[in-house]
Amino acid sequence: MNYFIMQTDERITFHKNLDYSQPEFRKKEPFVTFSEFDENDRCPDFFSGRSLFDTYFCVTDRLKEILEVYSSALQVVPFFLTDKKYRSQLVCWNINLPVEECIYLEGRIHESPRFFLNGTNEQQYIVCVVNEKAHYLIVSLELAENILRRQLYGIRFMPVSIVWKEDKAFENNHS
Image (cartoon, rainbow, N blue to C red; front, side, top):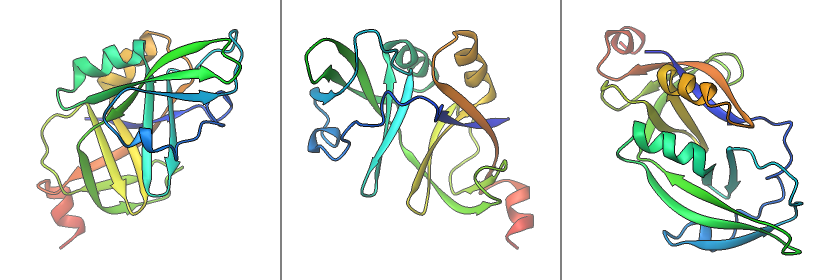
């Protein structure tokens, strides 16, 4: 199965001034967070941010509905992204998935890397992978195509290879 890292298009600045260090991002309860944006600004359907060693993946309603179909392990917490001048408010979702540990990362992250994972090779459409301090949201080709067909805004995909611990390719590279 082909996989892709799901990323926010870095040309979009809408989410860049969000404060991910707020303790509410760690909690599993709805919360309000403030940012500067105009009611005419378009929010990307996927954006992420970091605070210390935590990475937060945030999605809009449209993307959340798609992801829920592809993963029963997906946990979502709503938050209300509110303009500091109270001109506009958006409902977004902080998503959480079980984390797969990356035993080894081959290649550079911007050049179609290969992830060697400790998990089992069941068909997974979406997986959160941790390598050292970096978190990646990796989706299958099928899920990426579905997202692209919906013409969601601000999402880009970078191809990657995944090798699971029980695969023969894993044994050959780590014998």
